[in-house]
Image (cartoon, rainbow, N blue to C red; front, side, top):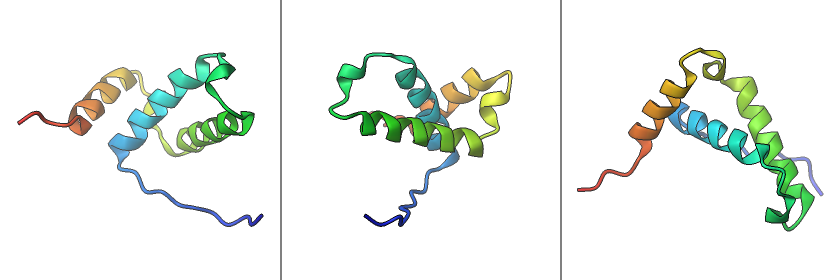
Length: 78
């Protein structure tokens, strides 16, 4: 197998929302959600990568930032 990388671009809002989701998801110890432990490892790795790139999770108003990011990303009902 090759060690080639796959890059995915996210907006800042997408990265914040995904980071918050992965943090909550990864806190749950229910490994029955995974078919293979490698799936869990991938999610841990993505969360770790986002943590290294984002400064917002360290801010006191992070939950407000998450709420605003979710609002901007949410589909608008027309």
